[in-house]
Amino acid sequence: MHYSQSASAYAPVVDLEFDDDKNDKKSEPLANDAHRSKIPRLLLALCVAILCSVLGFGGGILVKQTIHPKPPPTSTACKNPVIRREWRDLSVAEKSDYIGAVQCLRTSPSKTGLNQTLYDDFPYVHSRNGEASHDTAAFLPWHRYFIHVYEKALREQCAYSGPLTYWDWSLDWEDVTLAPVWDTILGFGGDGNEKDLESVHGHCVTDGPFARLKVLYVEKFPYPHCLSRGFAKGENLTRYSAALKPAALDELLHTPNHATFNLGVEDGPHLSIPRSIHGDFSTVTAPADPVFFLHHTQLDRLWWKWQQVDAKSRLEDYSGQAAYASSSEASLRDPLPMGDLAPTVRVEEMMNTESGLLCYRY
Ligand SMILES: *[C@@H]1O[C@H](CO)[C@@H](O)[C@H](O)[C@H]1NC(C)=O
Ligand SMILES: *[C@@H]1O[C@H](CO)[C@@H](O)[C@H](O)[C@H]1NC(C)=O
Ligand SMILES: [Cu+2]
Image (cartoon, rainbow, N blue to C red; front, side, top):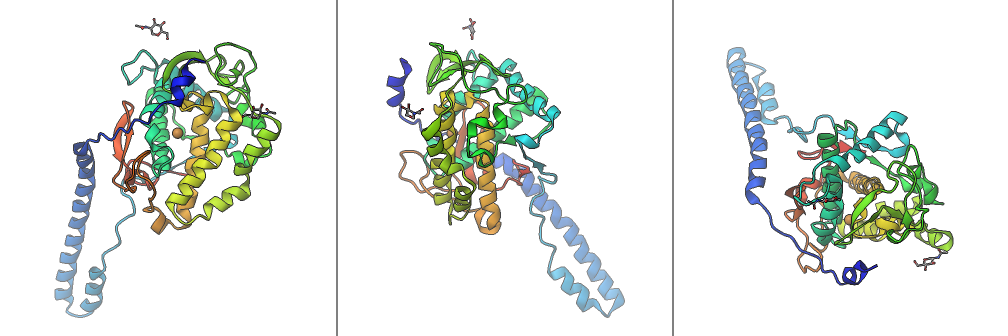
């Protein structure tokens, strides 16, 4: 495989370009909201003052109430968060809607200007703009944004109306290769089973809705080939499954801060799945395998669960190394670049799944 020599030599591209103007514009509506909410309060105060002077007595109590204004709502922009559900909790119709929308990305135009489809943009952007977020504090927030952009593409380009769905592999830890996500009809197809020179780290996937899907890249290099998988077996599979056990996840949920939780997730369950599935999933262009998104939605769910344990502090807990090969400490102001797929946002916009840009829960 000619790409692998250069692949091992690749250096992360630290793409920190960031449009400050865009972000300032984004905060305008919020400022207006805050301004608007002051008006009723002023009116209320005025009414109370008039009432007090008319009634003359009992006013003390009323005045006291106006001194303690109602706490502002936690979010003005996210009123009805969608609930992301596990793959096996979806109905037959919901599963086929999701699969249909993912297939539709293959007929949607690329946002990169390259001769490829919107489907190919995701592995492309992951391997370039997303690379520097791996092995750093930005791992969880960058992928939270990435799967959000994917969900938006499914909805806006492919008329998908449901939420993202996750694969809770802790239910399958004894043998992840038997999970329902690999179903050939209501799933993403199974292990590659065709010896083919064009396959990558495995065999061509020949069954299911993504059989013989053409994948354009491996790592950062153009290398057209078939979607490939090569399920691990025996001892290897057992070894990789250790990080997927419910007890291991429980331990992760008890880690004290973002830095340890984030790296625990990344080095633990995050790596176990690509190692078990192999093929394209084990490369930096892993989003070429549609199951990548169900895997990362599950990782995002773990982060959400960890945040819920102590929401007050953990919705702002962000620490560790800012970017790959950087010596800076992570900051909530750090940019999350998404290439041509979406505007760069700051980490702080990804902290709360029920805030302005995001509006979902698990
Ligand atoms: C674009 O790619 C397709 C196959 O992926 C190829 O058939 C076509 O010739 C390409 N077009 C250009 C302009 O390169
Ligand atoms: C286990 O994995 C190693 C390397 O990843 C591979 O060389 C070996 O053949 C695998 N063993 C089995 C039983 O698949
Ligand atoms: Cu990644």
